Length: 608
Image 1: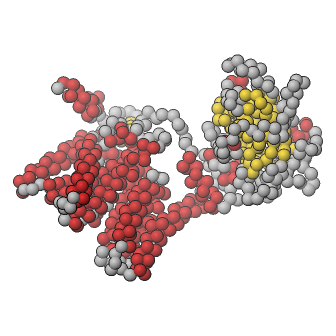
Image 2 (image 1 turned 90 degrees about the horizontal axis):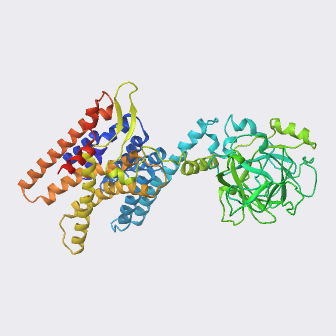
């Protein structure tokens, strides 16, 4: 594909062969592909999208709306959706192709030789192939994915309760068939929708807050309320009607609706969820949340909460198990029940802090809860109720999420969930990549010193970066000269030069620069798609210098000899790094030391 792309851009077979050979001898690309890692598949579809678009663009000149024209246009859209399907960063190349196609379409609209109907057909064809087909293909991937992978797995907890309940086994065995509508007297567990730093449930236990914290601040000394990341009988709460004393469900059940005032009674201790104007343990700007203990002092209970269903369709919406996302707004202070995410000290058993957020800063998942396990309470006596809370939940009604709901949640989780925010020993920054100032140890033989490292060919990496700079300077120079009506290049050569830069230099930029804005942990392999586009640009710049900047045959010959010597050095470096690329033989300490080119280069500089 590297050969074909350079060829379709209008450059010579020699330049195309150079691009292909450079891809073949680049050690980092070889290592990544041999170990079947995602970047190789991503690069494949990135290049396929660019190649398909170039073939479509070239067939546009001679055979518009032919079978091959439709084939390459459709394949462009499919390849773009496949690139995004491999990794989300594939969207950068997709946007690049869309941008180039938009510019070409804009010029097509201005073509006076085409009729209005013909222009409209071109626009519709591109919209269908480059927008609708990629979207439909991407949806198809996940339709098959969710249809085949319908069982519970070890990492279900990062998904919502509704998503988990739609899977076979796991949470579905507990929740499938539970009563759908939450009623007064319902026994529920409340899971926080935020799920950070870990998924957890609203929890209380008989331990109380310390009278005095380490900082010297005082507390209410009432029963602790936390968020607990494990299933536990102390996660059960009873939804109580403030106007009635009973803690069981009526017959027929009376459902709780959006805007209703409720009390939350802790199932095992029968104390009411409470918040008041006392600073939270670790978040002094927020209110403490507790289960009320009557110490016969001037601190009355403040245990009324207004139910706010966030995803309601009407103001009369009924609170539903799993499906409803709710907030609890404190009636007295307007504080919202919120997971702060901070870990309490040992006196709080390292559980997560729950606070009353008095200053509402808009919607945030940390203030949203949903009912995960639910049953209708039947026992009024405390001892009988404790036995009931220890027993499994009952099954009455089944429910499933729609495909689009599961698809949307899965996309959002993939975008936002991070497995670990800690720094990795092989992590690096985008600036390290260009200078090849980092590597990744992929494998080490348990008995010998044979090993595999993700390490690039320094000659190719440095030359590719230099070629990108040369292209940018030449492009700006030609652009300024053309503004002054000085045309150094024939029009066809200029258009070929611009298109090559848009796809190759542009492909490097869109696949590299966005990483400066990302807060995730980054590694050297993130640079490989951008590097591949830079490698394609390298022979393009060489040929341009030879054809347009070398004025005489002697200059061309000297430059050609220089390019051959440069390529020989790249092959030599590739062969030198071969033991770390393939891991096929042991290396002695002296051989390993000799491969540390950067240390050797630094020593050479210091000597001179």
